[in-house]
Amino acid sequence: MPIVVTRGRSGRWALACLAFLVAEVTLRIYWIAGGRWGYTACDRTDLTDPAGGCGADRVEALPFWPGWGAVGVGAILTVLVIYALRVPGRSAAAGAWTAAALLVIAAFPLHLLFEVPAALAGRPSDWRDLGARLALVVGGVLFAGLANATGPRTGSAAPGYRPVPRWTRRWAYVAVALPVVGWAVPHGLWLLDVPFGISQQQLDEIHQDLAVATGVAITFVPPLAGLLCLGLVQRWGQQFPRWVPGLAGRGVPRLLAVVPAGVVAMALVMYGALSTAVLGGRLLTGESSWPELREGWAVTATLLVFLGWGVALGVTTAGYALATRSPADPEVEQS
Image (cartoon, rainbow, N blue to C red; front, top):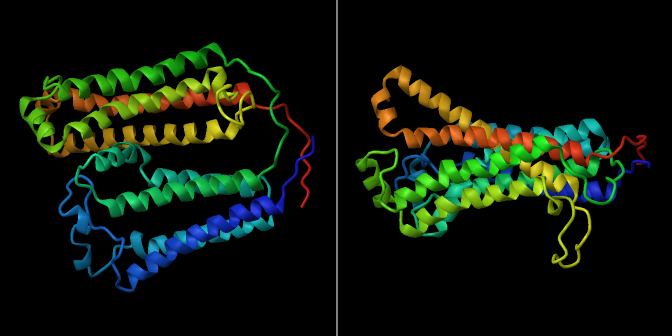
C-alpha cells in the first residue's frame, strides 16, 4: 500500500503547533519586559501564597529558562514545524516526536496526576504552575499530531484482535499491581490513621496538610490510571468495545495506545530515577540519615514503585507495539 502524506492534514497540525508556540513565546517576552501575569515564583515543595505566585510580582530579574531560554526553545521548535511542513518524512516525524516527548516530560505529568485532583478538592495550589504545565501537555499532544501527520503513513494493521506475547501480559499485570500494592495500600492505611512505614509525626503532618477528599483522590487516582495498562494486553486495547457509540468494533489507532503509554512510562522512570538520585545525594551530604530512611521506609519505597511501574509499563507498551505492528509496506511519498 503506498504511503501518502497530505499537506492539508499536516498543515492543520502545523498551524496548531505554531499557535501554541506563538502564545508561549509571547507570554515569555511579556515576562522579560517586566509583566508577571501567569508567572510563578513558587517552589513546588514549599508553597507560600500559591494564589499570588509566591511573590511573583516582586521578582525583578527573570531566570533564564522561563525567559530567554524558553524563547530560544520556541524558535527551535518553530524551525522544526516549518521543516516538517515543507519536508515531510521520517526525519521530520522523528523531530516532532522528540519535541512531543520533551514537552510532556517537562510538564511533569506524574505530578499533575496528583496535584490537579488535590487542587480541585480544595488544597492550596499554584494554579499558575499547573496551568503552564497543562499547556505543555497540550503542546506535546499537538506535536505528536504533527509527527503522525507528516511521517510516513504505512498500511493499517490487519483487522481483528492480535494476541500479545505471554511475557507482555505478565509485565502488564505487574504494571497494574505496583500502584495498588505500593501506593494505594500504604496511602489508604495512612488515611485510616495507621502509621504504616512512617512515624507518628509524619502521619500527623499528612492529616494536617491533606483534606479527606484530597487524600482519597491521591490514593485512588494512580491505581485507577494503572488499570488502563490492561488495554495493552486485552481486546479492547485493539478494538473499540461494542458499547462505544460510532466506534463499536473498529480498530483502535495504534499510536493512540503506544504514544501515551510510552510517554507515561518515560515520565515514571525519570521521576523514580531522579528522585532516587536526589535521595542518594541527600544521604551523601548528610541532609538525610539512614535511621530517618528506615523510620520512613514506606515513603522511600514509593520511589522504587514509580521506577518499577515505569519499567513494567514500558515493557508492556513494547509488547503491544510488536504485536500490532503492520507488515512493511513500500514507502512512497506524495506531496
